[in-house]
Image 1 (tube, rainbow, N blue to C red):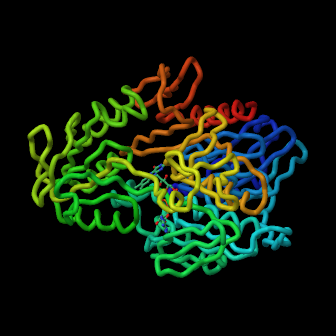
Image 2 (image 1 turned 45 degrees about the vertical axis):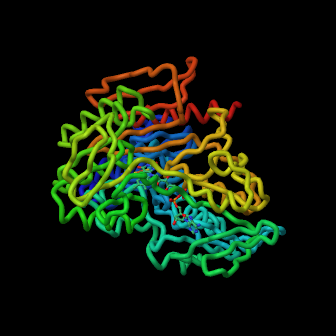
Image 3 (image 1 turned 60 degrees about the vertical axis):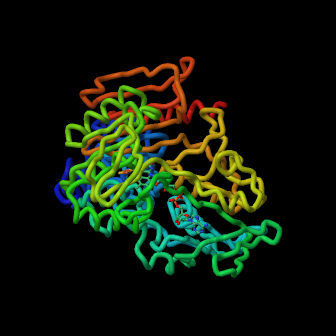
Length: 511
Ligand SMILES: Cc1cc2nc3c(=O)[nH]c(=O)nc-3n(C[C@H](O)[C@H](O)[C@H](O)COP(=O)(O)OP(=O)(O)OC[C@H]3O[C@@H](n4cnc5c(N)ncnc54)[C@H](O)[C@@H]3O)c2cc1C
Ligand code: FES
């Protein structure tokens, strides 16, 4: 894609550019051979790394330099400018890195730096021999990957009741469901990765209990598995509606790759679908089904879609956007029954539908943690190090409620990037590092060609300060309480979103 078109973008950095052409704090894109290279300057140091993010090829030159790192404008991944390493999710792999020199008033990019082969670190005394991860999703995968990246030599068992290895879950409601991404986009890693890395991935295996005293978990077949450190990353499950017809074969929820495949198979046979719920996932599903040429009706009790999270202005925009693409809304109404031909609404009307997707929210999968007696407060209560009330048991992702330094509150969110970042922090802390989880929450949602980026966390606010033109899809909205910015949503203002995140981090660090 863009990679191929832009092989020789900008100046030839192997020949060099005038030193004066790259100001302190500046970034520019050039090339070395066919590689597109980002050149960045911090004082007297000049760095050269791959110009495209390893997540979805975001243009790093349009991102933000923070210290010796660069952050991607699209979904806020972060890379070391010194090594190219992916420092923050959602990037899971590094970008290439080159050595540079400044000579005779010129900046020249030299050779590609070959990453040094990993050298196993000696096991620290008291470091765990057996790490067990419950959950093969965002947090579980990120933890396993980080453990090996840290040269952890002990055993890693990842238990998942899903039948697929860890997948790029956000894509299941977006390009993959829309038919514009092929299946090879979906796995987070190739199938042989787990064996290569010595990660014992046990799929289709449910964990039914935890014995905190003997440090064992119980699997669905009654067998036991011992752990020294345990990470709970059981994620969420879709809420089902207590109405007749919910169990019919054409009624779906969307969480797993299997769910997504089932929706795609059904979509190939129908002309009309009903999406219940104007949630992020529900509306992304609506957009993807429209891309497949299906007539889509969205039924939701809200006055405006997503108003509870984004406020009335963005809610109105989201409604307009979907209506422009042919979605028909049935707002301030709910379904009372589903049969094989139609959905009946409480308002009395009926909508013909051969496919129904229920996207009315999710609930965290807390059963295991509750049964094990861990402290629960609408999520698994964890400390700043993501450790639960039971020593040696950590929790990350959708289930974890952690002390968020920016808001000062204990919060739980359902964001891909947060789950991955927490998985990594939990991995470090399972190895004995004492790293606080202090990342500012971030999520994105994509509706047709309009991305919404959101940093921070605002459950309620008393003011939304709008900068720019919401209807024109070029805006930043700041959600404030008593004058303090709690969260920032933006459309096509990636730089502002990154700067807002960095500002919140700085403020949180001072608390
Ligand atoms: C379709 C879709 C689109 C999304 N899009 C976005 C987006 O655009 N942006 C965003 O920020 N977020 C998005 N999200 C949310 C994001 O995917 C989640 O926040 C994230 O996956 C949470 O990660 P997790 O590791 O906590 O849980 P998950 O990724 O759900 O993983 C949980 C794992 O635990 C396993 N498990 C649970 N209980 C057990 C048990 N008892 N025994 C064994 N295994 C168990 C499950 O099978 C699963 O493998 C989306 C979610 C969905 C479903
Ligand atoms: S493309 Fe860079 S973070 Fe997604």
